[in-house]
Each structure stands twice: as structure tokens, then as C-alpha cells.
Length: 198
Image (cartoon, helix red, strand yellow):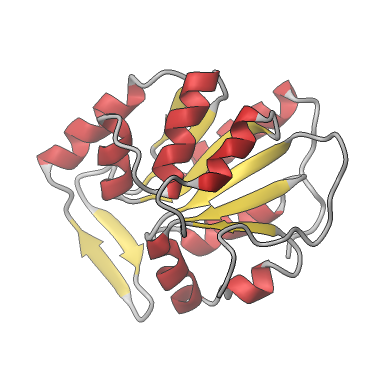
């Protein structure tokens, strides 16, 4: 049986890290994973849905674990969130974020690993960046087999606006905005992108 916290392949000493949470969305998933892999000192936090979806887009958890610390949603109390209290992370990223995750975060519900990470980060004053999937009247997204046209409902837009008001949370409507927000955050931390990815 797998541990909820997979052992790290390396243990950098004294350096705070990015916590990148992945949900069950395929919207810009490959681009988000590649972007995350360009960050210095990044760990992945996977929802149960992310574990199902990642392999459909060519990302195997076992392969990720060869180079990254990977934390999985295997405990009711989201045990890995405790590392936020220990000062391990300076930034939490949720990308891509499903409409389900956005809704939960917007209403303060924290019953998955990604939603718990955002809630606890906010309570600790740790900045969070969220790349929301349903941000436009028509969203063209890639499914595992084809491209799909989606039309988000009014409730998705209402939840998105509510999320924008959450303390210490910055919402990106586009992938370009997410990249720009990460650029800004790296500059604040006096850090730079890695030259190459996974």
C-alpha cells in the first residue's frame, strides 16, 4: 500500500518551495505541468481526480516521483498540508483548477488536498495562484482524445468572481496570466526559472 506522502527523491536543505496542486482538469494540463517543471524547488500535490486524469495526458505518477516530491490525496485530514505550518512553502499554485475546485475554494470548503492547501495557505498568509478553467463564455479545451467546446454556466462565473475576493489568492483567467503571475512571484522571491523542464 502506498504512503499518502511519497518519499522525496532529494531533500534540499533550508530552501522554501512551490507547492503545485493539480486537480482533475485536462484544460491546459500539459502546459501547466511543463510550466511547473520549470520552477525551482517545486512539489506536486495531487487530488484523487488528478491521479486519474494525469495518465490520460501522458503523465505517470511513478515517473513524476523520479524527479519530484509528489503528495497524494490519501488521508481524510490532508496530512501533507501540515508542511505549510512548518514553513516549507512560500507559494501555493492550483493549476489547472476545475470548476468544482473553484466552487469549493470560493465558499471555503476544503475537503480535497488542493482545496485544503489553498484554505490553509490563506490562513497563514501564504500567496496562492489559481488558474481557473471556466473563465470565458466559450472554452475550447483538449480532452484525452479530441478538442471539446464547453459553455460554462452562470454559476461558474459567479464562483470565479467570489474566488477573486478570497484573501491571499490571485486568480488567472488564461494560461498567459498564470505564467505572468509566476514571473512576478519569482521576481518577488529573487528566483529565476529553470532553464530546462522534465
